[in-house]
Amino acid sequence: MRPIFDTIVAHATGMAPAAVGIVRLSGPDSWRIAGEVCPSLPDPPIPRHAHYGMFVHGDDGIVLPYEHGKSFTGEQSAELSVHGSPRSIRSLIEACEARGARLAEPGEFTERAFLHGRIDLTQAEAVRETVEAQTERQLALANAVRSGALRDKVGLMREKLLSQLVAVEAVTDFSEEVGPLDRSAVRSSIQSVQEEVDRLLETASVGRLMRHGLRVAIVGPPNVGKSSLLNALLGSDRAIVSPVPGTTRDYVEERADFGGFPVVLIDTAGLRRTEDPIEEIGVQRSISQAAHADLVWYVIDSSVGWTQSDEESVYTFSAPVEVVANKSDLGNAGRGIAVSAITRSGLPELVASAQARFETNEELPAVNLRHRELLAESATALESAVSTLASDHPDDLVSVSLQEAVRSLGEITGETATPDVVSRIFREFCIGK
Ligand code: GDP
Image (tube, rainbow, N blue to C red; front, side):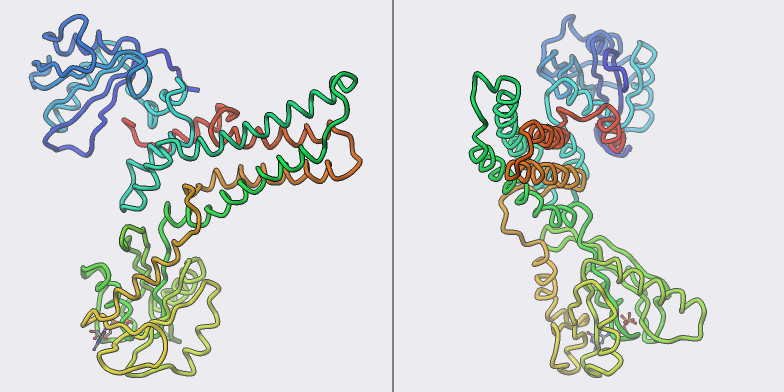
């Protein structure tokens, strides 16, 4: 684990050059170092008060000090705002380092917030997701988790199991005093937690789409307008459009925002038999992209209609297939979603059909892959607790399973996460967060 008793420094704002850049200090020497790099800062400074001053590297700006217990990390800290030039920021960081601060590693500020109990592990993950959010819905999900929605939910489930664990262990340790275990009461209480675990698990598939984007492979024969469709949806000329079949020799991948939902559009080379070895590689890659997609848009040309070859191709995909009848301005294919990349008619319907994949009945915040694995572990443990209770196996076997479920849930929020797990999570952050 990284040391948490020293003072760290990092550039906390976006890419320079920018109008303003913020350098963040956290740790016991933050105020001293801030005072040394900005000599007009009063000693002690007024917490959460903006102090204007001249910095030792020649730029001027603001020092915003936070006292211990009232900062993001929970430590004494300070934010130093200067002009956002790469040189000004670099010089200020070097001035802090020369006075004893250590350059922060990725995620170290948030890791300290977690280690000081300011936030749990789900909130820490959500800090990163908030910073990285690109669409409105991604931000809404990150905000919900950051506010503690998942921590509270999982915390409550864990509490319920802990109280059952106490009941079971009391019986196994002091059976003479407390009498036999009320197995059916324990069982129904565990079953209610099982239902909650299942409901959270059901959010995992939408959680994955929300975090990584719905992967939509745009496939179909050459010249039906796949690249035109991609461009029409993105509003740019990212893919090459040409009237010669087979110009998209490889696939093009673009992130799109469908009404707040993140989508990854993959334009693939036209599916057709070809003698050209390079085009053949493109065709093979299309097939493999389509195999990994969450949704396949099988595009046809409305003026040509549905062909025998389409009939054969469409069954080769394992992902759900939506037929998209492009060039609706030239005819009516009589099947699929009618669109025209040229007139843009039908595009809202196409977008809506992709958005529908994000639909969920749950009000719960959608979980990520790490949560899903731990929820699945706790589901297995709870299942075995319930089957032990239904059998004539001894009570202490129930407590082993319950402990396992409690541990898995605790790893989601971080109470029972090992230092290794914790470091792995924070190393994926950016520097300064
Ligand atoms: P791809 O090979 O499937 O990617 O097809 P392209 O996007 O390169 O388009 C092939 C040709 O069809 C180009 O000449 C496009 O301008 C034309 N095209 C694409 N979409 C439409 C459409 O909706 N209507 C009409 N009339 N032409 C289209």
